[in-house]
Image (cartoon, rainbow, N blue to C red):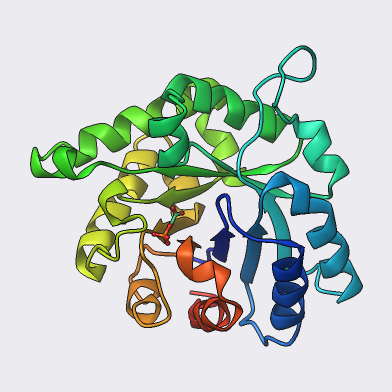
Length: 257
Ligand code: PGA
């Protein structure tokens, strides 16, 4: 089954205009494998500069700009929020939704995440939908229940057919920013579960959905993780702030499978 490989950079609340220039120049010289897409997701103030820099370097085909969040509302009295049309004005194509930091720190619920996914899809943006269990949930053997409870509201809200325009990122919370990566076998097992969960609604869509792994991916462990049958790339936090290291990770993404 041919699936798109994606390596996405989640800068979180880090980065600068300097990093925008450095990253776009660094990525411009990479020879990415066919079917590999790189998505860089900086904070909102850097989106337009990054889009312009990618355009300037003529990289629009394999390299895209993504946001880290979007409002579920169209417009109005929502101080501090950013709408889908505003992201489009910044030439954004992807948007990370339901990141565990948004769920834990900003109390986003799976229902709200589902509304955001719908808003993004309606605007033609591709959601990178994050799911993942905490350390306590894994210890209590609740990983599959938690993942199902994060995925089902989105399926209910938008319908399984629209997963052909959704990318999933499996990020075990205990592996994010901790240096504790899931072993390739453990990550593969969970990715397989996510795919089988989607397959219960539609086998063809499940087979085509790109599922990225995230959580302490670095230049050393990326190759083995990306070699797993159901891992279609990665969502990279800390290591995406270093151009050299992020480049190595982009080059490790397998192309057509
Ligand atoms: P990390 O973050 O690579 O720094 O663990 C991943 C993420 O939160 O998306």
